[in-house]
Image (cartoon, rainbow over the protein chains, first blue to last red):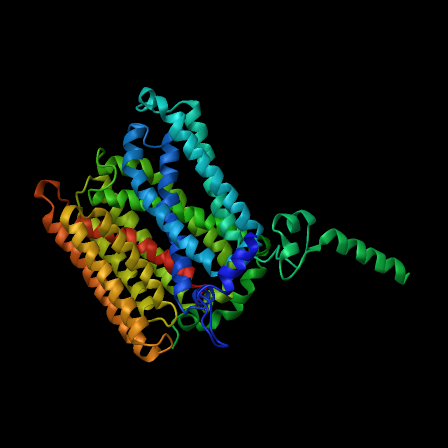
Length: 214
Length: 276
């Protein structure tokens, strides 16, 4: 279901008549500079987004801005972080639109979304639970354990989101290659054009061939 | 002629080609992607610290604390970022040396790195440490750093296929103005910016065909200048609209601007190595 919708998004939406007509998605991917600018903007905005959220997390850990109240650090820095996040979402959605089916079958993209969701859940818990008694520890050099755990979870999850994002273009686990069964399942290779090829099966096949030759 | 390290140092190709076989490059090569992640993480540490420290010099951000306090809290993290990009950069650069030897974007990246280090450590950080007082050595380092950086910008602007990457620097400058501008100026500035974007899109998509590069190229170059003039104009207007007692000197603002944008230039050039 999801895959059919993405195939439509990639190959049909916006396509005019004629043999050389492109869908909007194909036109975006094939653009001379625009795709590159989107991708570059997505990467460069990490300086604004991750660079500032890391500082807020480090304050919550009690390792920087220890003399400045947590509320001052977050009130003044988070608007910058949110600005960066909005740019990342807009460019990220546009980049996804340029090759949705490719990302659908990409294990790193899927992992990135999982860690993104975890990061968001962590933020939600921080705002609804951890921050409830913030006035009690706002000026403390080292905030309480719950806030520090939130900060570590935030650091780790964003770090993983960035790492997974960087791995997306690598072809180590492309569908159709002999890859571990679990990866074939996780990125739904069976429904892909290249199909699913289990590494284990290939190894068995190779051993059987060798046996037959002897 | 293509301006790359081959043009600057023509005789060293055999040495460059052999770099991948030298320790530790042959160890790095199969782990390339992991080191790229570390390169990006270093960039975020460095960039985040540069943004916060220099925005404070533009009277934005943690204004409850003086610039020296921002400097004191972020300098070690920025140091980690700078050492991180250089070390991981050398490692992934050795593993990918021949491509960089042929790349014009890499020349830009090295100019931005050198200019960024000079501007950050020679001008921006000393000025932040002194709460906005500009010493004569900070002035000197600013001129040296800005010159190296602008040389890199010039190489990027004249490099085929990579000059588009300058739009990252323009976007960053546009964003910084949007962040530092207040009140009516912010809205006038934003409206003008959107009008230029609309005009550019309209002309390049409706008036000319998408493959009419002969016409589109000069039009886009004119628009690039329009963006630059509009953004720099807004920054100058903001400087004079700020109340005198709240205003950092024009020199401090110049240092702050260049010390953010130089790292954006380096990162943009780094990314466009792949698109060259």
